[in-house]
Length: 257
Ligand code: PEP
Image (cartoon, rainbow, N blue to C red; front, side, top):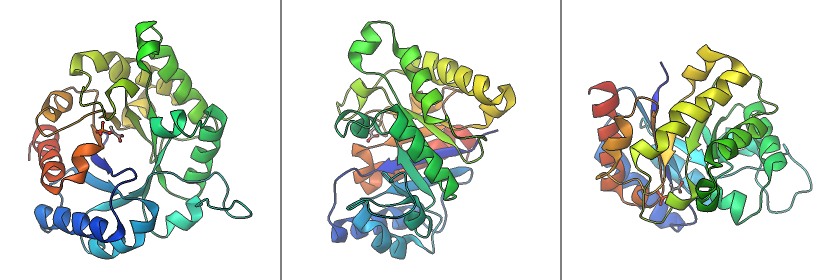
């Protein structure tokens, strides 16, 4: 069985002191440990990773970065390598829709980043999802399968891999997908593509998260869906109470805690 996850993506929000306060509040809310069976991960901006690590190092919270470059070191001004991150955090988001669409990261770049992240010993959260026009054209499943195939082109094992399905039209819009709309992707296209690449058994080991306007109010519907093992949360992860409630609900619904 895959594990269950609640991942908070803070995006380009919080100054260093705000990030420290938010991490402290989440840590305090969760007490000594994350509810059993759930991995709670926070992904602050790069500049706040070390100060936040200092806050959470004696807690069960895990740390993630929002991006990484595809090379280990060298003349790449302004970039951060997976090797630098490996000392600090456990997870890295790769291929978030804002990077695909605003920063114009293509399939090849994302595949190279995935390879570098895995080589550095980090757990990649490969984000996939279709735009509204792709969905309207009936291309959602094909788009997601292609994003998975190209993202994993140099990844030879599912160990440590996490996939986040985030329909672009649901991210930051306040309009989440419905659990019924997403199961063709989380239970269908994603598992089918993983099974094609790694076999049926391995495909079932990969946690698949839903992301897109998740809140404590709507998260239960997604978590009740067996093909979803957790959530990637943007806006609501900037509120300590909302994020910890999502962590608590993940434990309650998925692990029965
Ligand atoms: C995200 O940042 O990955 C995300 C899903 O954002 P939001 O929850 O704000 O839609």
